[in-house]
Length: 158
Image (cartoon, rainbow, N blue to C red; front, top):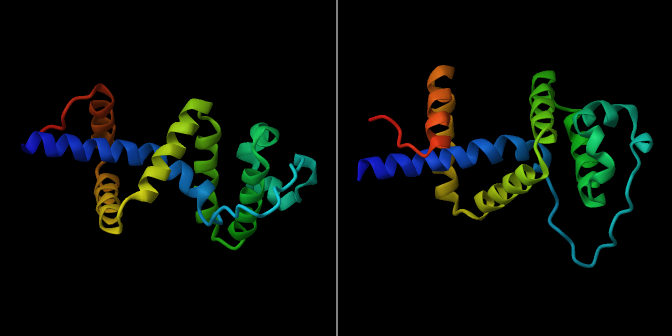
C-alpha cells in the first residue's frame, strides 16, 4: 500500500512538474472567457512595444501561430510583469522559454494538466503544492533520479 501511495504521489509530482511551471507564467492572471465578447484581432510582432517584445521574446517564433486570445493574454501579462522584480521577470522568461521549446503535443498536454489542476478541490491543490515544495527542496541529483524513475514508471525508493 505504501508503494502505491508513493507511486501516486510521484505521478502527481510528475504531472505538476510538467504543467505548472510552464503554464503558470503564461496563464497566470488570465481572464475568464466571455462568450459574448468580440474576438480580438491578431497582433503582429512588430506592433508590440519594445518592452512587450523584450518580455515576450521567448515566444517570438511562435507569435504568429498563437490564437489572438493567447496573444492578448500574453500582452496583458507582459504589462503586469513589468512591475515585477528582475528575479521574477527572469523566472518568467525561463518558463516561457521552456514552454516555447515544447512540441505542440507537449504544450497541449501541459495545458490539459494545468486545466485538470485548476479543477481540483482547494485542499488537493494545497496538497500538490506541498508535494512540489518538498520536491523542490530535494538536492538536484535526487530530483533527477525521481524524474527518471517516474518516466520509467518505477515506484520511488522506500
